[in-house]
Amino acid sequence: MRAVFITGGTTGIGMELAKLYLSQGWKVGVCGRDRAKFDESFQAHRDNITFYPADVANREDLQRAIADFSKPIGLDLLIANAGIGYKYKTKVPDFDYSYKMIHVNLLGVMYAFEAALNVMIPRSQGQLVAISSIAGYNGLPGVSAYSASKAAVSKYCESLHLDMRQFNICVTTIHPGFVDTPLTQSNHHPMPFIIDAPKAARLIGRAIAKKKMVYAFPFFFSTVVRFLGILPRPWYRLLMSIKTINYSKE
Ligand SMILES: NC(=O)c1ccc[n+]([C@@H]2O[C@H](COP(=O)([O-])OP(=O)(O)OC[C@H]3O[C@@H](n4cnc5c(N)ncnc54)[C@H](OP(=O)(O)O)[C@@H]3O)[C@@H](O)[C@H]2O)c1
Image 1 (cartoon, rainbow, N blue to C red):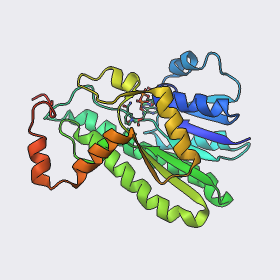
Image 2: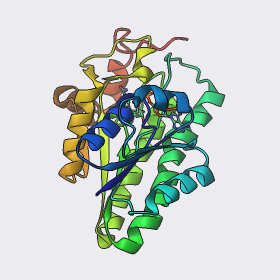
Image 3: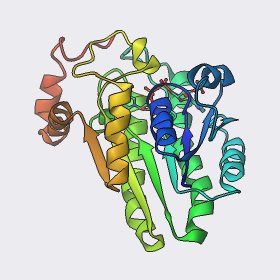
Image 4: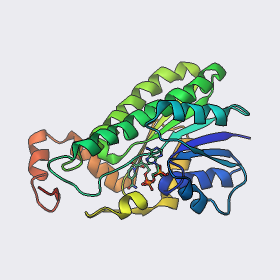
């Protein structure tokens, strides 16, 4: 039996990934801060899944959870999925929340990878996956810490992909566009080309199985956003001054 640990696997994309791997016969571990979300999401799927109450911003708690889960049969796949976003886009950042976001979205991925590599390197096998975002391709207005955290996660994974090959460990970065989850349901801005979470999980699962280095979706929207990243910066600045594209509040 193969084993996958998913951080933030109690709602949204993480929950759908957990259900996907359960349906394929994997042993699944998930963590989150609120056990009630796990109880609600997995009422009908209690076999082969274990919940660990752990905040990904707490290195010791997360390490303990991943080590406990891996003890019996090892760890084939780690998906660092837990993340938080902004409800509103604001020009002046809420700095307290921005610091928290860096802790959860960036350090949370590093802590999870560290714990997983403690298991995977001695066995010379495994796969690490981070759920980044297409928001990491550009410094988007109004979500500075979110864009920064996801850009950092993507570059971190790109480096590790090269470094981990010698241990037969694959590192995959996923860049989703908008996905309909509790995180985006409280957004107050337009979300073009949004897709549902089960479809996102199927696409992500397929990219993981193919051991892709990077996977972005949906194709058209992610291509447009990537294109913005190679535009000369004066053109990008001009585009982002258009009110229908840049809807940050003062
Ligand atoms: N939805 C989108 O459009 C979209 C697009 C691009 C990228 N992403 C990324 O995809 C990932 C999943 O997002 P989602 O939309 O599925 O969000 P979601 O529905 O809000 O789910 C987030 C999950 O992470 C957990 N979590 C949040 N903070 C945590 C913490 N500090 N420690 C442990 N667990 C924590 C939550 O459980 P608890 O609250 O109980 O801890 C929950 O299980 C995030 O990294 C997000 O940035 C999402």
